[in-house]
Image (cartoon, rainbow, N blue to C red; front, side):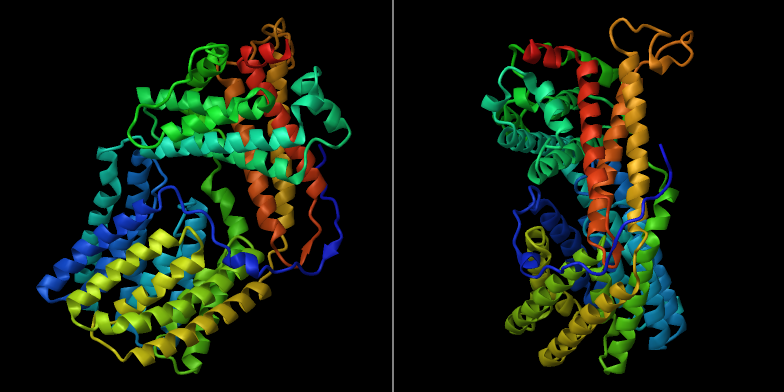
Length: 603
């Protein structure tokens, strides 16, 4: 395997989408969970402050309360750790902002600190892959804290209030586990089953049953693969999405370490999803979707019905249980390995936020942190996605200020009305944002404007004008900064990901050969010189999961690089061939682990 990097023809620019950026998606299957959680997490502290007549302190309580938005897809053991880290990260960020605000009133310095914090938020949240809502909540709270009047003596009390609200948010986030302790794992398994069913449907469209005839699924794939006709783009996308969903399901199931009965039953369902990827021609997608549907609610975990395949997965399940959590962790990377790719994104964020804040100051806007937050919210994995987020942010904010103008008279009836309106917009933002970011921003914008009035009612016209100006400044200046800071090494990361996939595939292939019937210890390629022991228990399973993780990472890296400007032509054909070979090896590994899976199909 050569380490030389092939040269590719330079492509000067890529198209930027417009209409597609505003297209609505299906709502998340758990859209109501973060929506209800944030209402409870924000409502109790704010109503308490309202009763005490100290609504002016709501900014600091919301610093902790908004942590309840994170980690809803994680199993509860992992969620507890993640939420604790989110709260600690929020407290550290707010502490830096409050101390800075107490030491200087220079807007130039405050904007600079806010931009550096925004870059740190972007890097850390991407590195840890904490998921939605990403860095924007941290940047919103820290930037607002920078411009809040402050003395050094007030900082400990304000941090204590944020910590108390953060502890309450942690309890709110963990509370559903008392009722449905395996809810996140069940949802992850259901997504894997649905994605596998989608792949089976896409496979059937490319390889009709009548065309396969009696040659069998393996022979059909081999003949078409040799002719370069293995599948079309839709089929490849469906397979990549299913592989990613299965990988995510394993990460969810193996995150806790403990292996209670319900989790073992979920493991067997994920195995069925993996078998569907290995043998789509002999899989019933309706049955996969039925199992996925049955995983919702608090019903018992469905178990595959007895019949032809009652025992066909025994070999796979035994191997999975023997491999244990260690095999599930084989695809994880050290956190230090992810620092390099994030540097261009962090630099974009720092430069864009600083310039947006300074332009806002030059225009005389009294709240430059709004422009800073707008710029920070734009930066995604690549420039194309950043452009789409900019379009969504501008449209959502412009509609949102109109909504604020309509609601302001009601909110100004009194402090209680103000708090209740904020809670309603909190719920609306989380309920709608999974449909499209712009739709959620329609509620986020009036919520942010109302929060600025916790210290006293203000004239709506001035707030609306400032918000519109800062939105346009932040979006335009932030995108210009993204264009200026190129990320031309994205193509190199594809080459690295291809190398990783090839090494993982070759290792898995050697283990498959070593475990063939009759190879025995010392007789297969996986045994080295021929006199040593063969692969240990769980070795093939660990290699298979490592290859699956590498394929998921390759697809994510390719998608991210495909949206960058000023990027050389990408090795799309090599990526396609590597993915096809990798998935064939995964299928062979499943066959080797569970010999009954395809024997009946190919008899």
